[in-house]
Length: 409
Image (cartoon, rainbow, N blue to C red; front, side, top):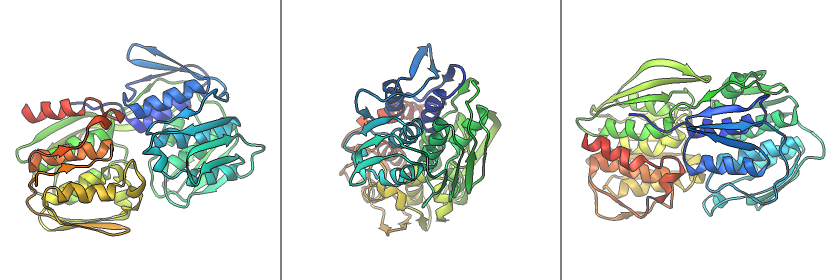
């Protein structure tokens, strides 16, 4: 089986295309609403993006102040990274999003970009936000207060669109898709798990083939790991080590996972992920490991529900400000199948057992990853009912059909 193109890389490829020396051809772009938000915002900023069959062609050009507020829909990646690009380009732009995105903090990225020289107003730290460009470039050296791939990327894009060198320190192994993509496109960039330094210069055009989205593959990996008799092979999945904490954590729990045919595509590591069911045992997941599995922590909590013993997951605080409060969502998911969960400010503890549905309707707060996590839980626990599955279009429009196909194969 395969999964859609990586959502994180898709955002970045569209934005980077505006700074290439020739039109950039992007294939296997993620089809979800989040990436559509980035495409629409770039078009409003004057970037021409054409369709050629299954490919998108991004034509480079200078960003221009949009005639309307940029609608970032539900996408935090869109607003944060384009705040950086627009700040670097020195243009005025207004940003807004849906009700869910308006609950997600924007002050951490706004504060860093103000140090860069941009004038940014937020609504008490949230959207809507108004960027007034930058009177002059001030700081070029930034220190992250906490690891964040989106803020790091915003600062790198600010430097890229301003044509000035920037350095970002204080990282702790957050996603490095921006660094890999810029390096693939010929940028002079150096990075490790702690810092990233970018020198100015246009990007060289090379076709970008977006690898399969690991966060989408993760749902099928987790479903196979907890469902007796299961065996799957997810083909062409990105296995960037900053993203694959789920595989390492499941491995600690005794899951049978193998990476086959490892290779590289457009600067990203890719492989076929083979998974077979095995009984799981409880483990302790550190905050560093949790960072590499931040979007998959609800899946790890579900795996822990089926494991023998008590599992502790540290590093959960960032889950409070995702599309929904995913710490609360974990508690709701597992309570719906009779599993005891203890949540704290920095960790969650799960007592494994024999999950079985209690018949309640799960409130998902229109969070696509929680809807998909509920479907994974149902694979092994039994039928569950959610309040809505409309949010699946955010990242994986065909998820339900693909999961059903696998379940009945």
